[in-house]
Image 1 (tube, rainbow, N blue to C red):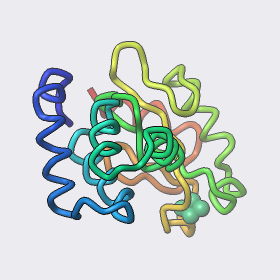
Image 2: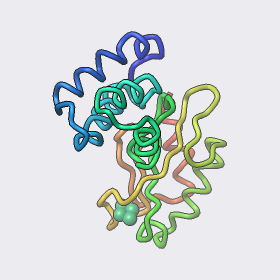
Image 3: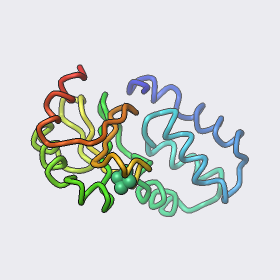
Length: 159
Ligand code: FES
């Protein structure tokens, strides 16, 4: 993920490259947002404004799309991003206790990033791994069959 300074330097360039890749068409809004989010780690305001201007979509609509989907973030994320599956199969497999343990261990609520920039705690919809629920990912590493007492050890693996 890019640092804040790099983001400031690169944001327009990255938006431009997403616009060129998908074309300057309104129906490509979501793929464009996804590419920029992937490349920058989040969707800064400047990016949303630029996309709104080029695609001629009202800023309010671009912002509401950017904040609606779990896969997008409009705020910079922490160095490590936890995504916890919040759907029913994981929930009934004990997800509530694991989620509580995650909140306690990170001292965060859903959608928050720690003040030291280490953790972001996000929820996600089904990851397609319901058979091994509860499930979470950290920076793309997958953890299944979770129990609350596994959480401190797992988090300790990340600096
Ligand atoms: S419901 Fe959690 S992975 Fe499918």
